[in-house]
Structure formats: structure tokens, C-alpha cells
Image 1: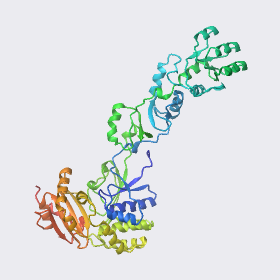
Image 2: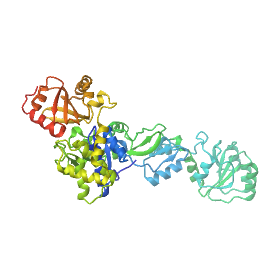
Image 3: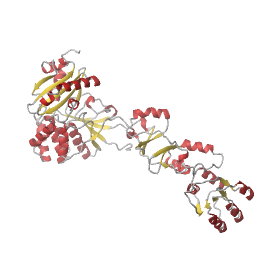
Image 4: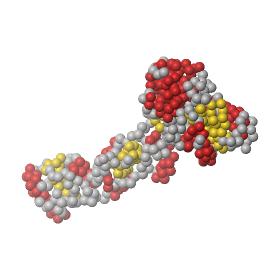
Length: 551
């Protein structure tokens, strides 16, 4: 459990991440770390073949996978440093609670597995039930528990691990009265008595004699006890106190709740609030594989510390990781249009009209005099190559080219040779299913009143995608129906010909016809010279929606 105060800032790109999304997260995390910020690169989707090639080429690990940013138990749970064992005594429990000021304490076995929880109220109930000396037989108390609880010195030793089998008696009356009350295996509390009296008590069949008040015991009595193999203990406490202490020898497992309400680190806070409201305990154990890993209190859950995130390569809520509304956005580094994300306070935004977010990230390193290692330079370069399709995309700027050339020199690669190899690794459908192709590099947009998703796959031969167009359309239609989108567009981009086949499903098809001045009655249109979603697909659609009537 992390607890509060040391949570990292996650640097994360959009869903269905492309190479720029992954590499800008890694690159910007490097910059923030160099500037003293605890930043961690993250992703919210599976990496594609192109990105995998770049990561493996420059020997870099994939960013941390974050399925969502919804607050979970792990975000509010604290490390549990105070526990007791199930065989510990109530005396030990009382000491722990007094020192820690805790209202409840988890109970574990010798392996660290959680076996229960015990509270102050459990102790209080037992205290009020005490009307005298409690029988310890059924509680399976050992002699070692008595020795520990009464802080006794062992004068005549025996098997400390042996369970107590008799009752506890106080030799307060006459010798005759005491002897008449004793039974075999009993434990007797005695004060300052004569050697004769002690020898008579020892010979009555008892198993243990506890001498209270620090009284001395004659050597003759000790020799008699040793001969009879009877425990003799000497405690500094008076008889009344020893009686109370013996009642505290009971193992914790006898009063604990053996089936406590537990949570797991990945449980959503929204899911456990109802349970907490129903039971109203002060704290709850957090377990993983039955091991106690933390504790969560009902107070902490009311105001969970929000995850802090830096968004890279996007700024639209529909493209962001699930649960972004429960997180605190602290920065945005992007090269796309403004998409309407709202923040509760002013934040740092770096948004430039360049072809790739990594162009911005690289120059931010240089602006801050932070050296870029060859591996990071290689990833930043990979993203620029990917987003600009090796400078063929209309989104490419001179700044992208200049930055790429400088990064290639740092990374120690031939820009064109490496670029073609990387694009080739990502091109083609390989073993992708129709569903995977349809959702490749998918982004969601709000265009007018329409919710539209646009995915893109870059290939050397678009025919291999168009040959399964019917299956793709079925997947895209199903996606629209299930997720509530109006249209699903798939850009099949021909890298060699610098053109795109735009496959579409949903409605209104007139939006496609109006935007690209094409006959949109079929299921795809051919768009020569079109390679950029950001610059050549979304802008025409945004303008066209103003000219058509809603259907």
C-alpha cells in the first residue's frame, strides 16, 4: 500500500495508443523525472506492432498499463504496521491497542495470513463478563501464556508449551479449606505461607503454584516441587492483580471475529462504500491472496486523494483513459485540436501545430537543457516518423523534420533506413482479426451532434484490408449499436501511394459525401493524397456537419 503523499504523476496518452501516444508518455516522463518530478509513463491500451518494433529496437519497456483511473482501495489504504497473532493473549492485545491508539487490530497466523480482527469493544465485552477467575481449560491457554501475562520468574520449570488442564484457585483461607477445594491439575495462587503449608499444597496434586507479591519461597518447598515436577512461578504482582492478569491469558483467537469484512487492493471505492455504510466499522483489512497488505479506514475513503495525470497526444475526454473525471489533470502536451476537457483549476498546457507530440517533447528537453539519452531519442524519433509517415503527411512541419534529424543523430540511426523498417513492421494486417483492424488506433470525436469514431491502419497493400471489407463493416455496425456511436470510420492508408480508402458504417452517409465531395452511397470512398486524420479527415467533417440537416 502506498498511502498518501508519495503517489506518482501518470503520463498517459489516449485509448488504443499509437506510437506517438506511447513514446511521448515515455519521453515526457523522462523530462519530468530529470526535473525532479515523480512521473511514471503509462498506457491505456495494447501497443501495436509498429510501437512494439520501436520499443524492442531501442530496448525500452512498455509503459505501465492503466485500465482506468477510478479510485480504488489501494489508493486510500495505509500500510498496516500493527498486527497481533491469533495465539497472542488479551494482555498483549491490550498493550498493542494502548500504544497504537487503534480501535481494532487485524489478527494473523504465523504465516501472515489474515485470520480475523479484534476490536476494543470485544475486549470490553469480555471485561464486563468477568465475575471472577475464568476457567482457562476450554480456552487452551499454555503455561507460557501465564508466565508472560504475570511477568513471572520461573523457580521450578516444566513444559511451558503444555496446555492448562485445571482451574485457578486462591489459597486465601485456612490450609484445610484450601486443600478441600483443590483438584488435580489445578493452579494455586499463594502469598507468604509457611513451608509446611506450601508442601501440603504441593502434594495435593496441583500442576502449578504461583507465588504472588514477590514473596520468597523456601528451598525445601522448591525441592519438593521439583521432585513432584510442579511448576513454581514467582510474580511481583499481588494476588488480586494476578487474578485479573490470568483472565487476560486467553488467546486472541477466542474473542476475535474470525470472518472479518475484507477488501482487496483493486476494489473500487464506489463498490465498497455501501458495505462500509451498512457495517460502520472504523477500519477494514485489505488482503491479497489472503495476506494482509494494508488497512483502510472509513474516514480515509470519504476524501480519497485523486490520481494526478499528464495527458499527452490528446486532450479530448472521449479519447482519455476511463475514469479521467475522477483524476486531477495537471498538464496537457498535445498537437491536436482543442477537444473540450475541463479542469477545476489552471494547468500547464503546451499545444503546438506540429506533426507529432514527440516533436514538442524533444524540444522541451532542449529548452530545459536536459540531455536526451540515445534510447529516448530513438523513441521520440520513432513517433515523429510514425505520425508524419516519414514526412509524407500534410501535418508534417519543418520543425518535425529538424527535430527528427537531430534525434536520429543522438540515437545513432540512419533516419530513412530505420523509418522504412519501422513503418514496414507496423504495416499490414498480420494476424489481426476484423475487430482488431476496425479498432486499430481508434479515436472518438464529437462532431456537431454526432458521436463519431475514426480508426486508422497504415498498410503497404490496402487490398488485404479491402478484401475483408464486408466483415469489417459488420464489426463497425455492431460497435456503433453497442456503444451508441453514430458512425464508425476506418482509414485504410496506403503508405506507398499516399492515399486512403475511407471505410464507413452508420449514418448519416451524407456527412461523408458532403465532406469529401464523393458518392457515399457505398461503404467506402477513395481519397488520394489523404493520410492525416487530424488534418484531412476531421476538419472536412467538422465543416460538413454545419451544412447538412440532422437526420
